[in-house]
Image (cartoon, rainbow, N blue to C red; front, side, top):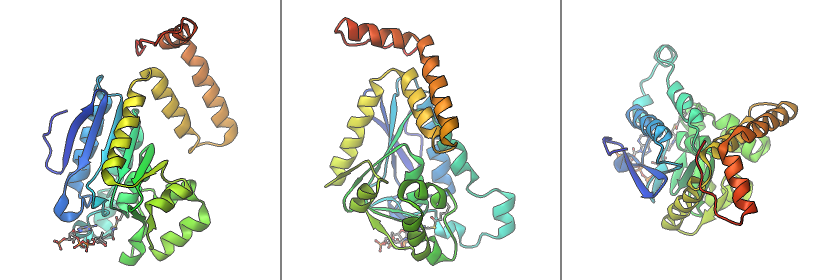
Length: 262
Ligand code: HXC
């Protein structure tokens, strides 16, 4: 994926790892429609690119993203928001990306920025990151999953307190509460940690990796009985893959598996 974009940078820091850096520094990576369109486009391209196994999404040391673009929303009317289905494209692409996305969150991840992080599969952050849903201070509420995904991560009481007061929580708290999988001391270590994990994931069978992401995400959408049935069906299906034979034969022969991705 080349750098054909104005608001994001795309590179490949290690084989198999596609990295997207939100890059609108003068607006603290506020998520304008143009930025989001580019982000969706780059994610789809990396998802379809056979040489990419996992994706890292990051911002700058100062801001992952300071929210949806307030200046763009300021004069929006109900009818325009409704008729254009404002921000529906936020939820239509990212949840359908089948390769794992790791967010490396440094600095502000507020409003839509927090919601964007919550849409990814794994969050890493630095201890000084600031997460929050401050929409209420602007006279609105979270609109891209904040009220739904945050509850799944931290429970209703904490989510309600944050959404009603608009107060921030730190990277350290994000890790303590289970929003983030790992917390790092510096922004650099955080991005490096995400790249290292993405490289590890990219070294797995792509069939198994896609199946794993799919079944874990299913648990967020359905009840336990349906989720367990779904997991078992996908598990059975993997015995029809070449990589299951490759992986288990390699174990028996004490070799490293050479995945076919089939
Ligand atoms: C547009 C933004 C912005 C945003 C910052 N900027 N956040 N522009 N939309 N969300 C711009 C500022 O206007 C300023 O531009 C420049 O970025 C630098 O910001 P400062 O405020 O000067 O920086 P600082 O003093 O360091 O404060 C950082 C901050 C503050 C605490 C993050 O910028 C802030 O409170 N931002 C808004 C956070 C927020 O409310 N997010 C939720 C948005 S609503 P100029 O031109 O003056 O230099 C939302 C809805 C989601 O996300 C619902 C569904 C999508």
